[in-house]
Length: 125
Image (cartoon, rainbow, N blue to C red; front, side, top):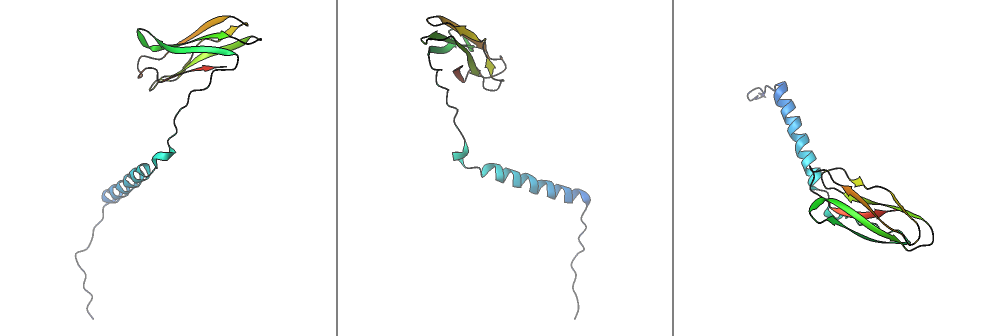
């Protein structure tokens, strides 16, 4: 019986590493694309702290500045601050404001100009 051998295969270290790398990239891309859409979670704004009635919004001429204007309708002092979700830039908090019963006050914050502006505004207790 005669053994037939085709052309000998020469494998270089470079072709092996390219093949391994290509396989890893394909496996990673496949894993990334295989994540079901239902795993994404939506960010829901927090409710206004009890005892405060608040209005939030963006500055009229600056989409990067947000505010929380609150009134303390409770019977004890309340502290609050505005929290801005700033897209590509880090989120920011405004100054802490303490209100006695019946008082009103405002907290403001500013997102960095490199981002996409304010995506969400909430009041933190």
